[in-house]
Image (cartoon, rainbow, N blue to C red; front, side, top):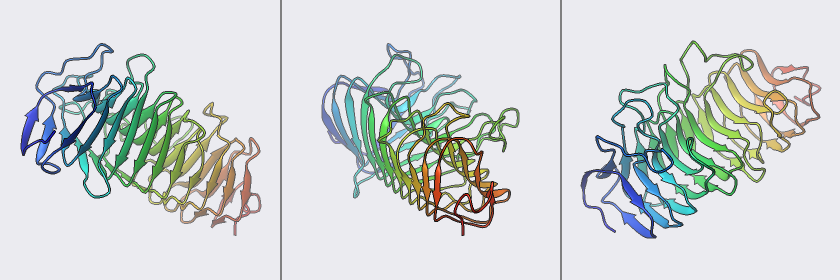
Length: 332
């Protein structure tokens, strides 16, 4: 199906396999209408793909904002019911913009693309292949893969929002047993400036993350991403290998690996990451992970920090400062 240049203000439900090709990003725009109608699960999505359909989409934009008030817009694109979305290609890209309330609110809604279980609704499954997609201006999250059985290949995308005074946006989220391969993305702007709940204390305050693995499946990998200007570059309480990422110049933490404090099961490999210029470069709470050849310098409090719980393994790291000490981290 070819979309001509223009703005199409409508909600779209797709329950059969098809291809969507627009005239170009920001030329063919499917935009939130003035009234959004919830689906049977109570979610108001601009595009909903369901019923096992496979949809290929390139050279188009899905855009908000929603009309308000709170909870007016759930996702720009929701992939549920065993459906598959293949959006963007290395040559032709796509965009999802301004998925938020209008005016912006502190509510926990407004996600660019979600595959799988939605925030309000029963367990669901979706499959996502997102390559060369711009996801900008979201309220809660850029791209989400959620629920056991849901999968995502998330590569070479630009995920960017603006710091929020109201809530804590996150860039890429894999949660509730979802699995994803996350590589070569640029993720920025996920900062929470709500001083009532957000701030630099990991134990008592909330931080926004560039890439967040919250009960992600062990097969999830995070590799070769550029993650900066977020509260936390990368957070994981679960999931698999995290390697060769540049998580520098984040506000509070470059990487946080959290097991005992967060109720996670983190046990995997963290290697060849860079984490410069935050309060803490790499912060580790328990677990049995392996930390090898990471580099952290110029962080205000500690470059490398471990709470001395669990049995993580440290080798061949590079840092200026470390807790409990540089010898424990094998830090040169």
